[in-house]
Length: 183
Image (tube, one colour):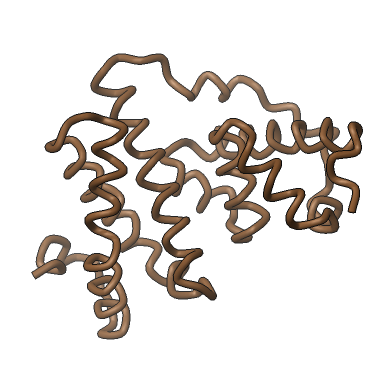
């Protein structure tokens, strides 16, 4: 059974059923995504286990999402970033945590201003930008997650999540100056 792995986590019956349904629905897709990034079945299985451990901790957040598509997108982002983190850790690639040193939060687009943009144009720009920043912006502005929740989803430190949102905002600021976001 799926829940005998982590007996220290107390889940309600509703949460257990939700996670079991989620596992049945998303497991193969998660494994496929991880395999495409890692080219290693064993590591892909490790990624799926790691992501589901994170999902156990965030089951209330997942249950609060309004649509199954939002849950699927959240899980995809978690799997993709956990796979990249595994790839860096075990293949000795350079780390994305180089962003930890960049922390200029003074001048950036206000959250309310971003939410006023034309949604279709905003989503187009977010999906076209580097996924490190696009995923962070999606989680922040489309799902309304906190920086801690974003860091957990992206498998990075909170300061890295803040930096990615900040740098994504900078990209949006440039798009706004070019007139790409005017509704």
